[in-house]
Length: 101
Image (tube, rainbow, N blue to C red; front, side, top):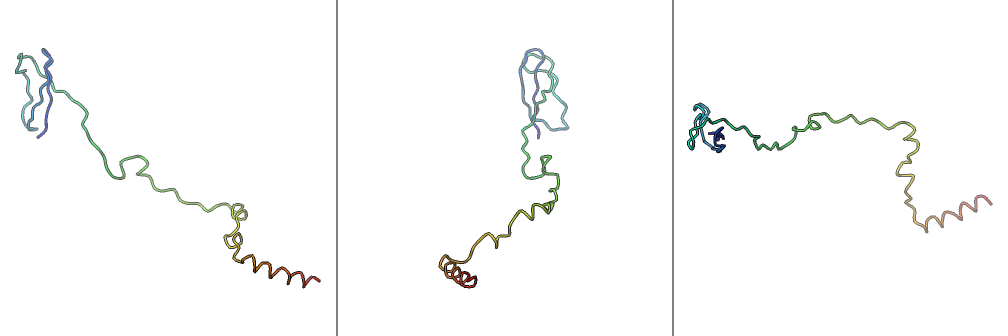
């Protein structure tokens, strides 16, 4: 059952009453006999999970391929890394020098 808050217009006293939704609202103050009015206040609510923000309901943007110029500027990983050790490089250099002589 919900809890309703009433305020007296004469004495200003606040009263919280647990009532059924089908019950008639209170209209007289028990302290002074003045007129009661319902007090409306924000409720405490927490939304958990995805889908509650404007950014959650949008689809993911489609990924576009980089421009052709970007592909030419980037070197493949195989060309940038060297697998030969320094001793293998030293061994291959004299052979190249012998061929030119």
